[in-house]
Image (cartoon, rainbow, N blue to C red; front, side, top):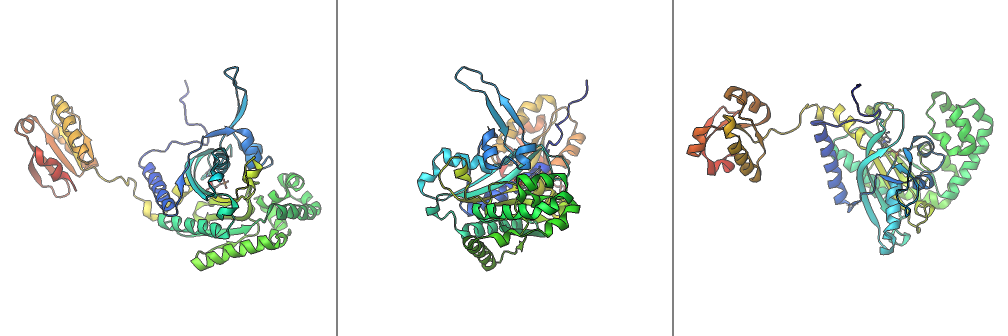
Length: 430
Ligand code: AMP
């Protein structure tokens, strides 16, 4: 029988690497808490139409990359339903915002999530079919200030702080405004007209996009198409006064806070729901898949999926890519960042195993980290094993059990000490 392997584009994460994942997640949670964000957890699968209506029918994600299946009805009261593994989490968060009537509180909601997303992309370094995102959304009724450019700047400043605290240096914040829905519609027509003459010289995808969704042409990565795309009209020239003012206020706040950015008028992002501010943080060390995170404002998303007016702004960062970036930097060259255990208990015989478990239980409950040996080991082997995982070894033989005096050896100093059992926890506490 052929051996079974993890499905293409998915991976197992093992220790010690998972320690780095946990460290990043903990840093993100700590930063989010300082900015008043609370955690939201939405289901991993949703009704397919949620993504079709939010992310957009002609985006690559919805048209080619979703894991969708027909869920059969199991009872008369149920209906068959098309379900999809979430390819991103903003749609789910906005659905939950609507479902739980969060808008009726009249307040701004700051929500973050950490979890897996699924896209049937061509796997390569930094691109997987199951990948993890850490993301956040600021959403609420306009009366709560959800449209304010200060929110955009605050989210961007928070991201700069998080990356700095993680020790990720050399990132670039690329920034653009795609304007209101009306600005975008106008720009789409300007682009459509400009593409009539040049599209036949472009790749097959661009020829299709030139007709169905001209804005998507700007996402094209085919090298030969780049000079043509650079010569197309810029979205910046199609923004109305309100959108220009909004964007100017975002950049003014970033300037005041000292967050560096680069303007990129081609940054329209691959999802249909974006309005006004769009952004990406990139990192040179990542190679072709250089986006660490992306996001933007989505003022019309709630209404597009049947909810109340609820402007918002959010982002999603690729946790897999943060890990790759940190692993590549010198700070994380240590192959096993796990701290050594406080002690290793070595029972000198199988009959002492129950007493060893009892002792380990006492010490662990006192807050110590303990690895437990097995009585089938001989003393020399116990020392070798203990030295690899713990700072000290505690010998538990018949004599020690009877006398209640244990022998502790410290590997760093080589000193051996006799310690009464009642004092052992205090003795081992760092
Ligand atoms: P998006 O939802 O496409 O804007 O993606 C936001 C971020 O998620 C990107 O900047 C990447 O860091 C990460 N990301 C997106 N797709 C993948 C993938 N297939 N594998 C790994 N990370 C991804």
